[in-house]
Image (cartoon, rainbow, N blue to C red; front, side):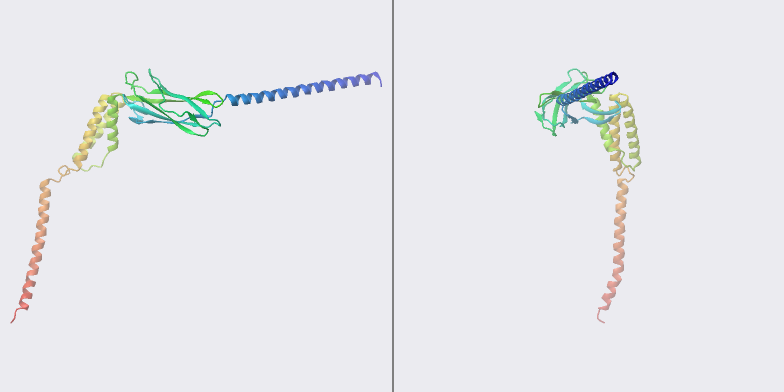
Length: 297
């Protein structure tokens, strides 16, 4: 073996050693990466919040619920000084039970934080439970009736392994009606419930047209925020509509006077008497003829 062959073998040996060391490093690096991924996955699973949420909520005993032209939005409305109630549904979708530490609802006005009246101490996996809030609606001095109010529902919980967290839900369409505003909306709902009845009598139709005009004027005033004027228009519209319905069933209004009704009745009676007299007149000759037949000659 000459010198060149020896050198070649040495170089080949060194290359193989380098490749072996590089492969070992790659294997170690890969093992480290896999270990880090596993550790991170376990940490995320342990630290992740429970898979549960506020699924729905329902306001109970509202003064009004629906579209309000003044706010130009669908609202949840309560009259100032009334009792508001809210039922929140919580669904635990996680694989662990959770204990409820407390719940609250917080509005955007001063002192607008209220704790839950009733809530479950624990929610098992896959279960749905209700949380109830009750509070007195503040005056319009504390919380203005000129704007909609936002609120946030918060439920504090703790999982079995000790992790603590909270579930949240926010809304923005809570409104507080003044006494006059609540009365105006009650009148408007009465008008809507009556609707536009079918009217035939001329006087009743005129009353109905006036009622519809007053209602439209009330709508314009309410949308503009002139609540007192709107209430007056709605009250007048309701009175006119009720008067129109009464006039429709009044015989004087629909053109049938009591005298004409009396004369009509007398005419029917005379017609009946005439038929009776005619029938008697036809029967008398027959009766006489039969009487002559039976007289002995």
